[in-house]
Amino acid sequence: MIKAMPRQVDHDERRRHIVEALLRIAGTRGLDAVSLREVAQQAEVSMGAVQHYFATKDEMLAYALKHWLDLSIHAGFTARVAARLSGRTGPRDVLSALAAEYLPYDDPSRFDARVALAFLARAAVDEALAAALVPAFAGFVATLRAVLAGAGAAGSGAAGSGAAGSGEAQRLASMLDGLRQVVLLGVLDRDEALALVEDHLNLIVGH
Image (cartoon, rainbow, N blue to C red; front, side, top):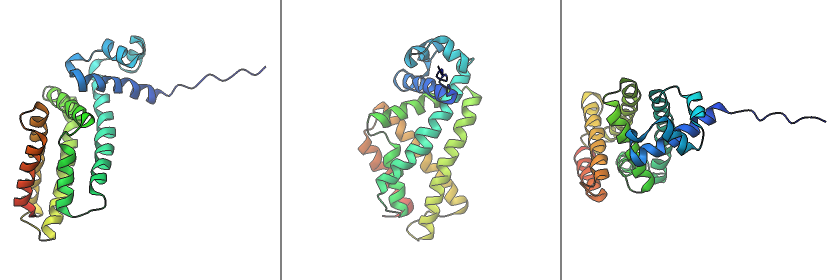
């Protein structure tokens, strides 16, 4: 009788399953609640299984942040912005869609904002996490810079390329990042925050 071959373990999938459990904790209770034991319980695996893939909490956090950036931000965010645009390609349309998607508007986007804020707070005192977040923010600035350069080329406002365009992209990225936090905290509601963004876009790219 031929014996069935043992099922091959997908180690990458196991790691993703574990860090997705970590992200669920981070997005609901913050990173202070993350421990190897809590993650094991959330993932419904043994402590030994978690320790097999991650020797320390810091190692697990670094992997989780990379996974979250790749899946939720680089892939998911881009797709959701494209869906908002529905084929429109004007610079003002793109910037408005980016802003609308960046500010929390439903449970999944609030969850992502909480995860972002949790990792940002930790990265302020953790060089390894900061090293992962800095390129992500730089990529966001580069995207804004490219859109603003297109707006300048089209003559639709004061935005342009070079140093001025780079500075405006930094300002806009910082504005969006700050507004996401205050919306999450309830200081402003989303409509108020979006109105501030739209007023700023009127100044830099026109209507």
